[in-house]
Length: 244
Image (cartoon, rainbow, N blue to C red; front, side, top):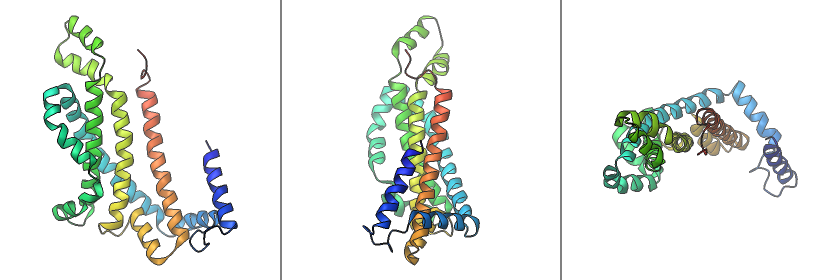
C-alpha cells in the first residue's frame, strides 16, 4: 500500500534534484511536506480542510437522501425510466462547472451555491446507478418471491433493495468523489474566505509553490480517505456481492 506513495515521492525528488523541471515551479517533496505541517499547525489549513470536508458531506448527504429512493422508484418502473432517461443522461453528461453561473444567479455567492451544485452533480450519479442496479436485479429472485406470495412492498424491501446495493455503493463512491471535486473547484471560483480550493487559488496568485502542492496533496488525501471509507463500508455491508 505504501509502495505507490513512496514511488511518487522518489520520482518527485529525482525530478526536482536533477532540475528536469524549474525548481521555482516544482519545490522539493521535503519542502512541500514541511509546508503542509506548518500550514496545518499554524496557517489555518486544518480549518480549510474541515470546511471543505463539511461542505462535501453536506452536498453528498443531500444527494443520497434524494437520489437513492428516487433511483429505486425510477429503476422499478421501466416507463418512468424511459420518460426521464434523456434528461438524466443529458445533465449527467453536462460538466458541473458549466452550471456555476446558473447556480450563482439562483443561490448567490455563499456556501449554499457551492453545496447545491455539488449536490446536484452527485445526485445525478446516485440516481443513475441506483436505477441501473434495480433494473438489473436478478429476475429469478423476484419471481421466486412472487411465487411465494410476497407483497410488492415485501419484494421491494427484501429483494430489490438488497439486489441494488452493490450498484448503489458504486454510485455513492463515485458521487462523494465528484462532490469533493465540485466543492474544491467552487471554492476557487465562487467567492468565499476558506476551504482548500480557496487556499489553492490563493497560493497560485501569491506564487507560493510549496503551499500550492501541499494543498493539492491534502485534497488528494481527503478524496482517497472518503473513497476508502466507502470501500470499507461496502465490503462489510455488501459482503454477498458477486455470489449467486
